[in-house]
Every structure is written in structure tokens, then in C-alpha cells.
Image (cartoon, rainbow, N blue to C red):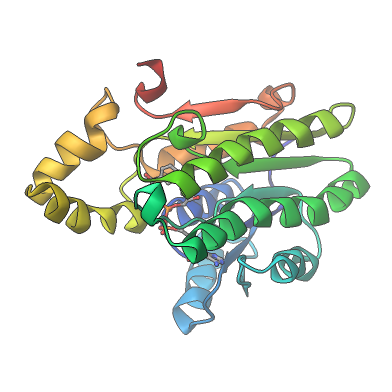
Length: 257
Ligand code: NAD
């Protein structure tokens, strides 16, 4: 089974890893649905460009995934979902006793609850079509922890748990559910952490990259959005049909430490 002609919805895909996965799946022939909470010309232009380059149908659908009804509406508006990539994410870093409650709620809503809503809405479509792939973008922080990231680490661990449940509930069907756990990938989400961390530890930005960000990544290299797109495409292939309910780390050895 190839992804040719399948519809893939990738949440949070006007940037970073989501956009990389969308481009990779479109290259392989899937019709992709891009998403974010904004509704700018540039968002729609990204989809048009993917359509033009890959000769597939690409669309952009605005939905704020901090709201459950909008997460479900994204799936309904897509019409058909064969491949669901739950990728949207944000970050906030603070000690737990100073962590703003509204940031906690927002991170859990976007990164954990939205995965519940999109998956719940998409599984019946996959069942009807007789094939489906749920791919959740968790993190090395879905398997290990770091200080000051209570909401992020909790959401990412939660996503790994939800992945296992969905895999068990669909185990007798041609549907799989897996989580990809990237280490650091140099995307806008990571770029945004560099200046603050530099200020906090009185370091240059280069020192932050080497000594803080890549400190736990033994390869000392960022993973790339293309590599993550390739892993997602592999999980959609026949070779991966019996891979379900598990995590695939793309972290340069982080979780081997
Ligand atoms: P990014 O900031 O480039 O992308 C995040 C995407 O989520 C953007 O498209 C953004 O618009 C979207 N988004 C944010 N809030 C949203 C909302 N309310 N509704 C809809 N969309 C929303 O970041 P990224 O690094 O590409 O991260 C993508 C995913 O990968 C996240 O879940 C992140 O936790 C995970 N991840 C990233 C890294 C890394 O090093 N970059 C490592 C491990 C896991």
C-alpha cells in the first residue's frame, strides 16, 4: 500500500516538523491538509506551493487546536483522513512552582487533548476506508524528563500512553498508531528557546546549542525535518504494518544514555 492518493492531515504544519512531514508525504503522492491556528495568505500559499511541486491536492485548514470543537471540526472539514499526524505543539519553560496555570492548560489542550479529539474523529473514517495510520509526534521528552518543562513533559508522556491505547483498540484492524520521539530538531520552536536560555545561563547562543540543547544528544547533531518526514512515510508503508503501539526515537542516541 502506498500513500498515493491517501489524505493526510498534519496538525501544526505551517512550520517546522509538521511542514517537513507534509512535504515528504506529498512527495510520496499523498494529498495533504496543512493546519495551524492562523488564517494568513502565507498559510494557504504553502499548500498551493506543495500542490504545484508535487502535483497532488494540498489544502490549508485553519483550526485552533487549543479548542476541542475546532480540533474535531478540522477532521470533519478534511472530509477523509487516512493518515493523521498529530504534531502541533508549543513550549513554556519555568519551575513548577512558578509555572503559570494558564500555560499549563494551554499546553495540555494543544498537545494532549487535541490528540484525543482529532483521533476520536478520524478513527471512524479510517475504519470505513479499511486502512489508517495515526502518527503522534511526541518527543524524547515523552520518554525522559528535563527540569522546568512540567507541562511539555507531561503532555508528551501522555501522548505516548494514548498512542498505546489507540493501537490496542485498533489492533485487529488495518490501522496502526505509533509515536515518533524526536530529540532536538532546529525549528522555530527550538530557535525561540535559544536567546532566553543564553540569557539565563550567561552563555553565547553557540554555547547554548552545544552545551544545553545538544548536551543530551550524543550525536551532537540536530535531527532534520526531512528525516522525520521519512520516518512518517515509513510508518505508512506496508513494511510497518505490524508496527503499532510503540515509539520510534529519532534522537541521536539521547534515550540510550
Ligand atoms: P514549530 O513551532 O515550528 O511548529 C509548531 C506548529 O504547531 C506550528 O505550525 C504552529 O503554528 C502550530 N500550533 C501551535 N499552536 C497551535 C494551535 N493552538 N492550533 C494549531 N496549531 C498550533 O515547532 P516544531 O519544532 O516543528 O514542533 C512540532 C512538534 O514536534 C511539536 O509537537 C513539538 O513538541 C515536537 N518536537 C519538536 C522538537 C524540536 O526539537 N523541534 C523535538 C521533539 C518534539
